[in-house]
Image (cartoon, rainbow over all chains, first blue to last red; front, side, top):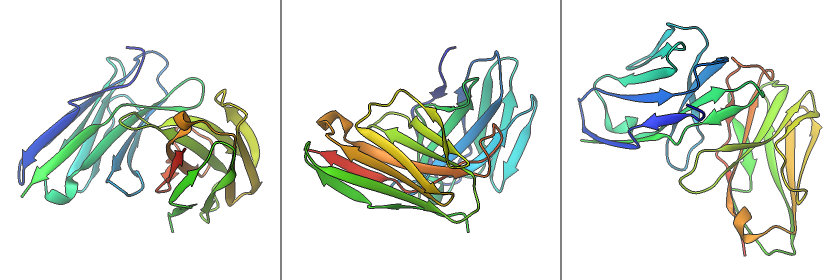
Length: 111
Length: 114
């Protein structure tokens, strides 16, 4: 994988469903992976910065895991709420010192 | 206070105009960034300033001219832009220019070039 890829592109769930999405990134020369949440017309909000293989981070109902050897990170949302509706972006910190963003997963939670 | 402010929120300009975008943070961060986001695409890095010095220029055309007058302020001067430069311009800041430093983003300036 040369770029950062996120799947699925979009997800529609019912309130109360748990959901997860994937971020794939180059597994060689890993430095850090950032997760952001971006609501329409607002600023992207930082969720997690992950640096170590096997890292697990949690913020309320949102958690993330990291596997640097195989080049993927999962973001989980437990018991989705309508206010979780947003685009979730991951960004890979590359050797050139810059964040390379994925296309994002657009989550819509219906009441 | 983890707020990055950007002005204006919206800007419409002609190809012969000169305009500037402004970004401000008061978190004491020493690294500041400009990103460009075209519709349905991920944000792409344009410039990085570290300690008020230009650290990274991602081969951005010279019609975009960044300026960091002090550690709290970042400007992007625009001149002779093209319609394809229409995009959302995001500013961000972080404590240092480091791999594990969280970047805090502003809400962006929506630029339309006619």
